[in-house]
Length: 173
Image 1 (cartoon, rainbow, N blue to C red):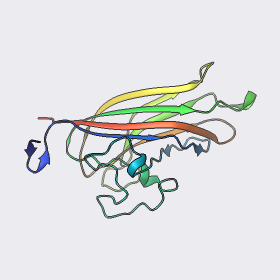
Image 2: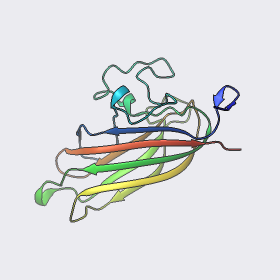
Image 3: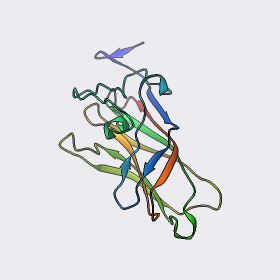
């Protein structure tokens, strides 16, 4: 593999998936989608999603720690963010009328420029299942993690039943 200053050159990919339902409370505050580590991951060859994070923090339980939702880019470049989001059905007549999702750089305020959101979407439920795919391009940097966040406006907490979050980094001149 070719390198550029010790960093692998070319496209680098981190592809994550979680099928353990996550209970998301209603409201305007977005929640980070938490993702498992190790064998439960689709692929993380470039170690962008590790329990031992680049700043030394160790995630002991992915299901309870928001840091498990962070992807730390392995190099600077043009990042393509991809997500698939699936929600459980709304709760009857008082159910949600809006599902929200967004990408965010540094959602936990770990860098000097936290909470840089992008690709925020507010969606109305469809008559069938609530299955969404989103894609967006951003510049990424190894010192600034990225995450996928979601929320809804149901009267009660709702399950996010499945999610995928992927980062593809291309070299940028």
